[in-house]
View (tube, rainbow, N blue to C red):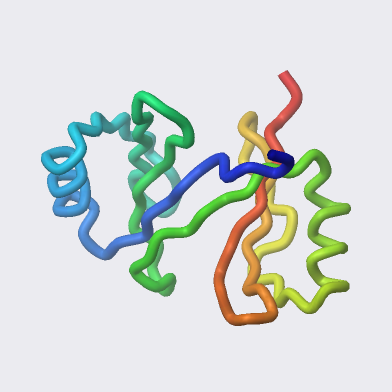
Length: 118
């Protein structure tokens, strides 16, 4: 399938509680990365996709799915032309890639991700 889901991300006000819950429920193990906004904890199940858990002030408590794209700028422009409201546009994640977060025309929040070239 073209453009598969490649990453899942949970924003939560209680990072420790979320890690405890998902760790006990699914056996996920987490790797913590210090970020300017706090800790970003990644997880990698036996099968793709993996994801992360963070506490981002002002963002709702929710899961966000990321869809893989080849060219973030082209995909973002296309999404906008189709009626998406872009919340974060072509944001670089140093050494990782680029992301766009948007609300689709039906009101669902979704993200796109382009990995950095190796």
